[in-house]
Amino acid sequence: MMQQKWLLAALLALAGLGVFAIYSSSSADFGWSLALRQVIWCVLGIAVASVMMRVRIKTLSAFAPLLYAAAILMLIVILAIGRGPHGTRRWFDLGLFRFQPSEVAKIAVILMLSRYLSDRGAIGDSLKSVLGVFAIAAIPAALILNEPDLGTAVVVGFLTFPLLYAAGLDSLLMLLLLSPLIALICAWEVVAWVVFVALLVTIVVFGRFKTSLIALVFGVNFLVYSLAPRLWNGLAPYQQARVLAFLNPDNYRFGAGFQIIQSKIAIGSGGFAGKGLLQGTQKALGLVPAQHTDFIFSLVGEELGFVGGAGVLLLLLFVVYRIYRIAGTVRSRFAMYFCFGFASLILIQTFINVGMTLGITPVTGLPLPFVSYGGSQMIVFWGGMGIVLGSSASRKEY
Image (tube, rainbow, N blue to C red; front, top):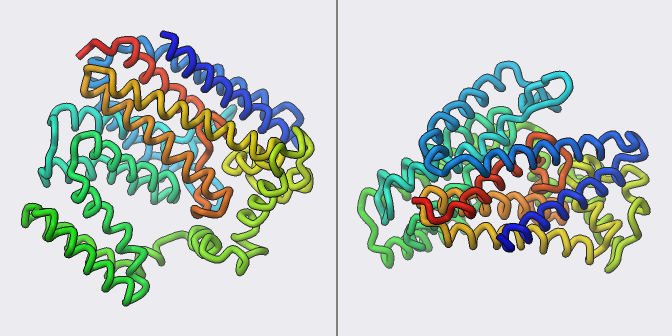
């Protein structure tokens, strides 16, 4: 129980820091409006968490396929009637607020993968089981990609790897499964591609995998190689610009690279202790767009400095660590997989969000968990925490 209190304290500290950062970034234009809305989202999120804590693990496992199907249905409907910037279709506009079903899809995918893996036990190198895991994540990821929302689609897809690791997948096989992502990068340079294929063959020789699995991996990699230009052309123009700006922001300093450059300036100017709350000059001049949402870490870095930025990261890492610990103590395999997947979700999204503010990952439009402004993500993440805390409280339940 004491460990749960420390976990809750860390979450409330993150939410509190987020409210103050949102106020600082938006007060000039909106006063307390956005900060107060964030408080409401936090309260609603905590209420959802308190409800989810009381739902039995067996009930969640039983309803996982239904929740997954509901998430898929919402993602299909959003493509027809959704709203969003740049012609995207990401939100249901409900008048008083907007709802983003892709946030719900993250939890639904973790629940469904947890159910699928818990029903099968250790998967070893079973090709059928591995393909089943990828299929569960691929369907919502493809729908989200069509919104288009590349960042969330990538997160949903990457959730498969930590859960496969938790299921006991061989490390070399994990490298093989990750290889198409490397193939996509190497496909643009012949020398890099040749080196990549040579390394792939080396892994296969030492791995002694099933012939069917080897054939599949090589087939997918060569398919990625041949389709790389089409995949690039399939991205929206603003997504292509973000990738190019990530590779060389100085060439796009007045376009897609502007946000990255200004974010790095804001964080660097904060120094060790920061300029003080409400004292950020990059913020005051409005030089970092979306600073209360996706780029909130740049405001923390500018106004609270290295101390504040490190504090936020340490709190998030503490939350992730505690959830992984809970995953190791529960008896229910379903609960173990969910906790492991949810902790990985927080870790992956934090890395991508903070990385894009520092210029080490492309700009993808992902919020910082429990900190960035947004009702959908706040309620969903708190709801996930409710499941984790409920799993911890009933850890002896199978």
